[in-house]
Length: 204
Image (cartoon, rainbow, N blue to C red):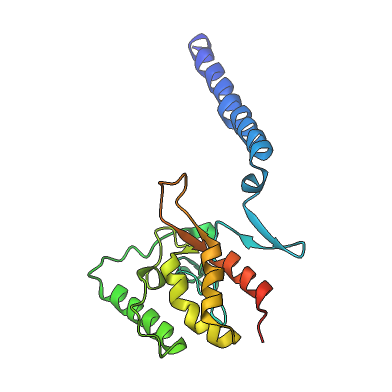
């Protein structure tokens, strides 16, 4: 019986070494040499301190900053393991809301988000871009559309006491084009935009 099992056991050992150790080590090594920033997590630093990742969104709620796309991620409730609580941009639990377009809960959530945005800029009359009202499929999206950034320019410029036209130029400089020129849509990384904002026009 051992004679019949030996080839299978040897194959298991060899494949475990190849696919579980050698291949991941080789890919990681090549990535660290060829793409060191990406391999390390695309971390963004300020004054030598890591402030976030270009791949994971963050919450911004002060009116003097650009706000990120909503997040639908959650985490276990520390008081009741059978329940969850909202935990925006929880990278360990990437998820969408999974609510159907016809769901009342989704409609109520979108309406509440719209009310929050309008309350922060009551005089804004332009339609709110969809990505400021709905979460992404991952719940971790670090980017917003250029339209979503420009829509917020009026509010941010007012709080920071700067010309909206100047702020729009800063946004334009932060717009990233489609990947490889054809994939995805133009986008603005919110963390990078807010860092550039603070550098050029610190909060009063």
